[in-house]
Image 1 (spheres, rainbow, N blue to C red):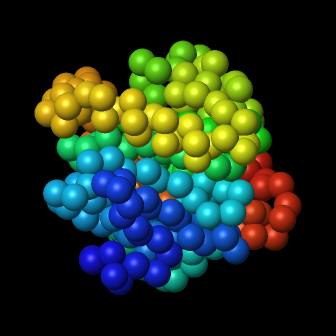
Image 2: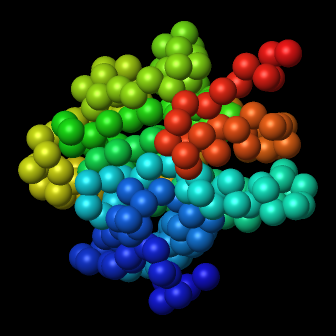
Length: 260
């Protein structure tokens, strides 16, 4: 997919920086299968462009990315086919390998909500800078999903008990907590995000492209690799239908029948 075909990602190059701006404000930049794919191909396009040396991933409005598009997910798994097979439209478009394998530094400029897949996407970036008002959550469990990529990318960064507590409860947390616990690099005032990103770009350019490439490779090789996204069992369960249905109906899910 060429950047000229993008519909949900604003892709621009300015002074050697590729800016990738997720653009679904009506859904808090929730990841449709298309947006996931456009982020993946945007990263690949920037990585292949000799005029680009750094990328910045951010969102429009007051959201970075509010996780996967749960309305699309529910429609996908209830269309009559095998839910795990149908979900390939999402999983085949996931951008995390593209981010991990990119030879160029990627900065996540977290301008607001970063939930579920949004938080995982920011974590795969090399530097993550969040505004004070940003909010974070590992919220997949509320709708019956667990993503193995979260377990991988936060391994060694966040204490296991802290991580499991936040995943088991889906409890939101602040930018200050996210920095203190190791989820992100740093926090800045809401009106200082763009300026700080520019400063970090200048700091990174004080080291060489070969250092960037090798550091990313050596570090990312230490992060555990999961054999799949981890959702197959969840997507075939009745719990995910209840969880996603409850989300759409704005009610609490009832998983009590699953314990019978």
